[in-house]
Image (tube, rainbow, N blue to C red; front, side):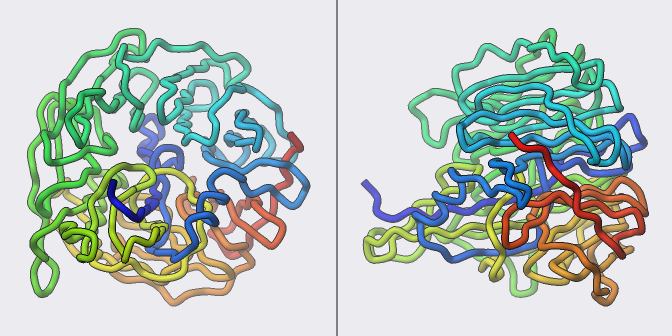
Length: 431
């Protein structure tokens, strides 16, 4: 047995909304957060995962997914401490809420995607493969058959009500386990087996599609490259990523987490893990994602790190504290033909995309805007926003956005109608 655990959580957004001109990135599968690393006691991190933050109105749940189709109409997933979950819906900007689909998730991640005010899907990430679809705004839901695979669901990705992909881990004795990709073009009634998008030793964690033909993988690789498809996921090619000043390190594994924005825009966060060199050596070995779990040795002592970067999966409840080591951030606006370095204003807060060029950064009491895809940022302006959770910022248009924040009492839901100058706290229903 190897001693010591090093865990890292990445957060990021969902795919652009195809039927609305790809105007935003929904925070469901892939949420977006600022680059951080938290040094914490393993028991504390475990407690945060299994005892969700509650909001100050007394509701005993955390918000694990959020999706709005306009400033008034939206849905959130409430994860209860009992292990159950419920989808909650508002049509008046959060003044009132109705309970919709309920189920058991035991703290697993959620995928929530609405294509308009009527049609949407909800999926579970993990060992319980569940996908539900609604055509009446969530008043009723229909269970959709998923591919007959025995492994765990790693990710869902839907472009519209018909085209979607699911990535499922295999069950062979090979480690890392191979991941199999499936595609539907009829809303989940039938699924096409696309096989294994990447072979060992590379390990695939997520598949995200920017267009019907074009998709990207988040993966752990033996080199600094990203995987891309141009034929609906049938075949995948490696795309080398440009080296930072001083070149890429050698002798380890590269986590390449990819997040599409829109119109050919893609961000890539690359984190290098040196090869594990025995009980007293340096290095780490990636084991799983999400959360990103690597095995490491530190004198036989268990150490836990929680990462929240602009790329990844799910809304994270960790509080940012410092930058992770050996990390490079890149962005492209031409589907990978050229890449440039990107930055973030602070190690805390959350990042959201209006499109491939206009981004917002929102932190506790401050906000900044980039008009060139994260290369440069405006000065930070003071605002009354609570501390945003990484991965929770969803921008609807240049005026309206929603996010999940925290205060001393727990989780809160916030919205703006004036480009982030002012934020309004939204009351949440009791369980």
